[in-house]
Length: 394
Ligand SMILES: *[C@@H]1O[C@H](CO)[C@@H](O)[C@H](O)[C@H]1NC(C)=O
Ligand SMILES: *[C@@H]1O[C@H](CO)[C@@H](O)[C@H](O)[C@H]1NC(C)=O
Ligand SMILES: *[C@@H]1O[C@H](CO)[C@@H](O)[C@H](O)[C@H]1NC(C)=O
Ligand SMILES: *[C@@H]1O[C@H](CO)[C@@H](O)[C@H](O)[C@H]1NC(C)=O
Ligand SMILES: *[C@@H]1O[C@H](CO)[C@@H](O)[C@H](O)[C@H]1NC(C)=O
Ligand SMILES: *[C@@H]1O[C@H](CO)[C@@H](O)[C@H](O)[C@H]1NC(C)=O
Image (cartoon, rainbow, N blue to C red; front, side):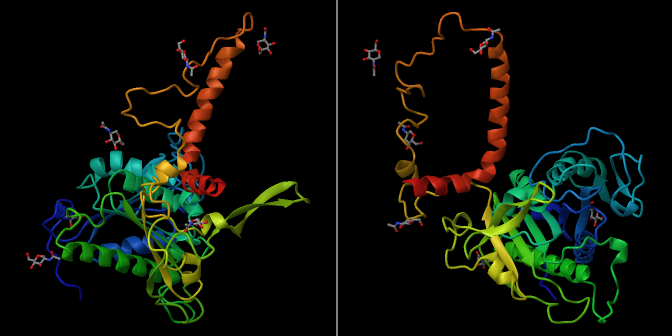
């Protein structure tokens, strides 16, 4: 078995026998995958809490959606919690498992700022694990769309190391439907995915410990995260893919997918489809020789991607030795300049024409403010793509 771990670092010192681990997902607190990962981590000796959505919150990215209702307006997914129950509460059978009626990113905040300090014997987890998501989270566009990755990103922003897991199997299953043995005589795919996730998480924990707390006693350095995609586990029917190896990959490259709009003339509605395009195939950061996630997971392999939440353009790792100087026009000045020039120009006039001012100006100020908030929200996802568009335009 694994070597004994000596915890002397800051965060890893929180528990002598295991880490304090927060687990969430975007598929709901009652799904098989999250419960299997929770069980596998608990069996490894970690002090685990689930705080996850009462029902499916897929595709919410890192949106913050707190409910305005004190009680659930309908029963939770799989009917585990009855309609009319509090919007935040415990699982009826396990007081380490909590649900909240909100988006995945809010689960992290509600856990850190309420559930853990109030109800656990720790406040700040050593590690956050998310998923395993039902359906792959492949390609960088899912960094902005996937609730699993949105929660992961939110945890990292709060300073906590986090690992996101997703799996190719897409049909939501309740935890109480996990089979002890499938018709093929194998463990349930959820059980196998939970074990794979816990095994990899433990390997990161052991590695950080063995590295003499290179990261200040943290499982990952501040600002770093990991995104893992597991292939389709075949154990419902056969053993062709039940023990996939973990393989290094990168989030962009290898013709990774983004989305396209697909119009259905019969309904007059749009849907989305995967679409491979140049914007998701570039390499700006990281190791450009690594395969993309799609390529890895299409075999019976799990892709493991290391990422950071620093979206700033790298200085000197692209083929532009100084991307700031090469891409930013002179109108964008240094903050410490003594002679900052206004964005409209040195002697710009903002004088209105005589007699034209009326009450509509206040309304346009309000919509202007809304626009700024929207732009801020969109800018995270657009940042990387925007830089590429700029580079191509030059
Ligand atoms: C917190 O509780 C867990 C079990 O729930 C236990 O293993 C651990 O030792 C406790 N930690 C502290 C600091 O009391
Ligand atoms: C870790 O610490 C041990 C004992 O203090 C030392 O012998 C070893 O070289 C260290 N390893 C690293 C990678 O710093
Ligand atoms: C720099 O990278 C861009 C985008 O990948 C590419 O089009 C261009 O040819 C490269 N320039 C050089 C000098 O390598
Ligand atoms: C002004 O800021 C730039 C970029 O942050 C820095 O390189 C430069 O040294 C600063 N100049 C002074 C005088 O502080
Ligand atoms: C701005 O106005 C000042 C003072 O009126 C004038 O000296 C200067 O030339 C003007 N600069 C430009 C760029 O028009
Ligand atoms: C207010 O200004 C707008 C834009 O200049 C104009 O279209 C509108 O007719 C004006 N309304 C009134 C009541 O003067």
